[in-house]
Picture 1 (cartoon, one colour):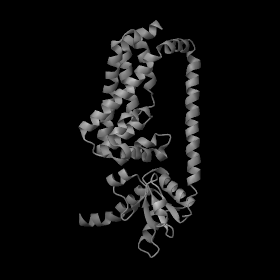
Picture 2 (picture 1 turned 135 degrees about the horizontal axis):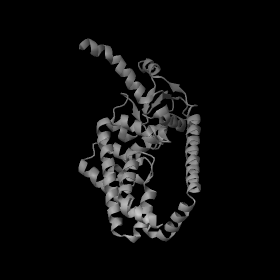
Picture 3 (picture 1 turned 180 degrees about the vertical axis):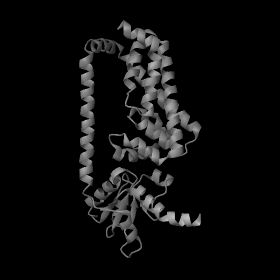
Picture 4 (picture 1 turned 90 degrees about the vertical axis):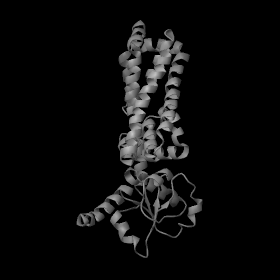
Length: 316
């Protein structure tokens, strides 16, 4: 244990900075346990506690600033890139946008406690054009709450953590195997949940963009329903004439209006999952004439851009 104490005193702050920065940038290297251990070891050197909080806050602010700038510049494209590395990528975008839609920049106060949510929320803050002063205020406050709570836990449970660290040092291979096994089980469980959800929503009928375009000017034109969160519909323009119904809002006011019409649902998520989920919810109320748009908003915009290309070339 003396070696751990010496290592913490000589390189502890650097380890905290690097670990926190890498985690907040998006790499799967959890920093919260490192902060807890730092809090326990720093009981022998109280100034390290305050320095540990400041170092963690600086690392968080750097990472948050990068995500904020990238969100402002690249918006929805970046959101999809973030969610591609998520174990729940089909619901990642929707959940991130819903959280910010409900509480605004205050979401940054607690987002760091959820894996991947910190990058997602700060990216949405950039997309939404949150003022830089407001962003920095909530980023620093959230970083202080997150890092301070971990260091405080380490201080409070130092008598239990120090013997545990000594035990783990004695049985390091077993401890590593246990951690890797737990991680493997968690990833397997998340993968099974995703496959189960995909299998369930695959039963919802689909419609392609060309098929929808062929129907829009006909007598049997369907009602197009935008399933994206309200915040996203305000920031990113959707299909013209679409009705906005998010997954989270009550369906009762819509049941009578949609009872005898064909519906096409679309979202901006992988595998048109949100669209299929809303179609399933309405199906449970007896409204079975709904289809999910294959490719969602991206497919619509791609088809629209392709149709505009000849005209743009001719003009040039």
